[in-house]
Image 1 (tube, rainbow over the protein chains, first blue to last red):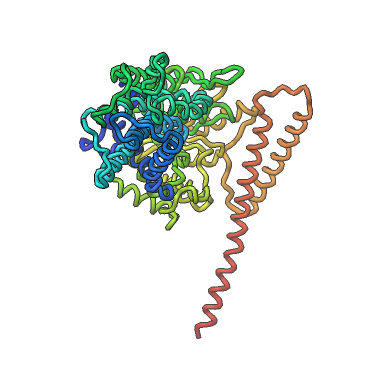
Image 2: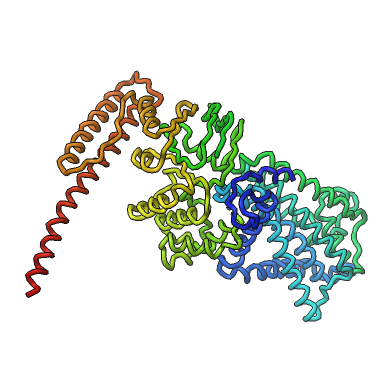
Length: 281
Length: 312
């Protein structure tokens, strides 16, 4: 990675190096920065807030509860072919929230850690990477917790094709990561972008087929719907969770990965290009 | 050793972006403490930030062959919702001191002297406590070169004295690059000086010379190194002299600022006022010191006499 090169200044205090003298390698500096940031973010996410742990688990539960009851009230009687609709929605919501949280938390990451750039070892890309990693870990833990508790309560949430479901989960994570990397730079340089993204959250939720099955979308609009990479990830994950589930044609994970890799590359390029502006702001 | 080669730096404003630093070429030898002089806006803090790697130059480069600190006493990197201990651990981890984390934490705790507050969130700290923590943190790491900017170094008198002691103990092992308007501090800590003037830098092997040149450039006046008074009457005389100088400088500045056709982009007169004010304060401090000594002496005598009388 090009941005790591700049870390290799020879001016780090040298404690850990067993050889003594000389500078730490850039890779080592990056690793200790990531570890330090990870510990810091973990503590402030889970411990510093009052009832941080409770909200982390209760928030998705509450959202799922609200969504399920909304659907139950207004759309009763409609079935999802091949899947229980509560489970169907849990999978969709968790997948979407994984993407969204990665994106939204990254936007604030640089601003929240501005003070740290006084330590030249910390680059603006570091808090973004660490936040995305932590966010994905937390969401994965919570999802696994839900699946376990669901299974214990005889509520069928176990994926039928676990490996495929895991790959789809990771793909959505990567997509959120790329979006976060890109938007963290843009949102910091142009604050309006962050606000617009926040506004676009709800339409995106509806357009991604989280609440309403994409099968209900008329044929002539499906090709536009399929331009949204999140739809591919969610539908593919649902197919891996429920073996009897059918969805629209044209679901293609390659398309999602094209987006994810393009966004990650773009984000990293932007971070290298605008590093000084991001630091100085 | 720190080498600065063809360094250019400017900040992008809305109107124009003049060079703050222009073609700076310097070599700061290792083990030599350096004072950075220049008036406000001359680029002292910018140069310090560049040396510390907090900012990057537009052109040219800086080669650091030694371990350089972040500006001492910088409290911006603290996360308010985390405790002092957690913040210290974080900085130690960044610097790869994972194995020595306990030692670092212990040293900072001992130096900062903030008691139980060390385990309270930093947002509950007063600014004095913050700077104690920040200062202790800087000293817990073995840097070759410490950077100090007066804007970030705050604290009460007793703490400043302690900080000075801590630095004195490091002379020989570490050096200092310092930005300050206080000439006394510069004389105390630095051997060499750099004068920044209109984006250019000039190196002086002797800080005294640098201070002289700095004054010549700002107000065309020669400044002699201040004499430390040896008696109360001498101190009083110096205070009177300083008062006079200050009044004169203030009058000059007032007259000049009443003149609508004044053209003084560097504000040299205003800086003369500030500097003479500084000297006046210093002279006053000496007088107070002598007076309190004079007061303290007789009291000691009385205690002695009472002891003697109480004995038989």
